[in-house]
Length: 523
Image (tube, rainbow, N blue to C red; front, top):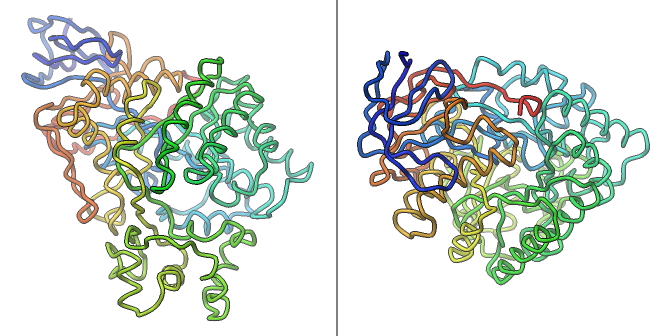
């Protein structure tokens, strides 16, 4: 037997959580052919992994790269940190399905998510068919509830009528039948925030018979966090569907004490038999569109109406009174199309320069950027972060994008999680803080999310599975991306294989695009 590729002399961490062991990994085609003492077996290509860890490729269970990969499928910021599969369509918004009469509304709403591509598709399946053969990572797509709602009824702040509810159900079932891994909600964002619990339960009932998941950016991560977790659990119970709570956190210092009861609610639900888990990113700062600071009902007539209000000084005065009182020194501007000189500054700094209030500064930035600006907000506790990370049901998700240091995806000062999430866990919370063992951390990044998605041939390193593999130096792996200089690749990751093909070799992107759009039907 001759392997196509042989990784020799590595320390193998197979994703199961079991102890690491010394060995070699033989790869034939797109599969792991054998694991063991294989150094005498011939191979067309050999990688010496002496002093390095060999493990399954990381699965980013919460990503928004469906809005950047159509621009550049190399997924540079993700594969350089060891990600081989991304779960996309999160927070209630996916690029498909796209209904012709609502196309412009969805495009305007998604503008802050880097949608630089042409919106020339309709069905969920059609969009993902277009990506086959263009990707350096695998994708596991999810359909967004907000996208379904826009397609059926735009941004109307009311319950759907019978025909609208039926239209959402039909679009959801079509996406599931095309292989979507589930439905996501973004319940702090319009139009998802306009949906009652009963609407979500009715839709979620289509998930369980198909083995799909309910992914939720819950209705509050701050003052109403516990009620929001209760709602997610109730949806899971009533619809009899597994629940995945997105980017688990208690945001805002006054809400930090809610971290323990939030965990207790999840534990209790699990003990009572509900299949509920969560994911998180390892940073004390979040990121989203700057427009999220406005009350959601401001967007009930769509983004175009908000833009008109921002042009009217009197209307801006009314809107400013709706913005929260908070420490705007902790809100950084990340991406400001048309006003790039503001990127990296806090709202407080901009307000001081402009000699205006922070609230008026927010509105002026939204006006200058046509509501396409994004922000980074510091509001989480490091101790809570470690507490959440220690939970055995917690996976790792970046909540970021596949970006690049150059070209159209190298703009602005995005959250460093798009470049550094997985190395940061291994550097800071394994090697330095020792919150997790190496085996525990890799389990959270590989087998745990793979099992959640029922991807039985990924997320583990055993003979017969797809050859998604990462080779890294545990003593050298280090996040390089920062809030000031985010577009920087990590150190210490030498090799990344996707479906048996080297995408990262000796720390450099090979240009290969062996990634696949996965479907739940394959799992």
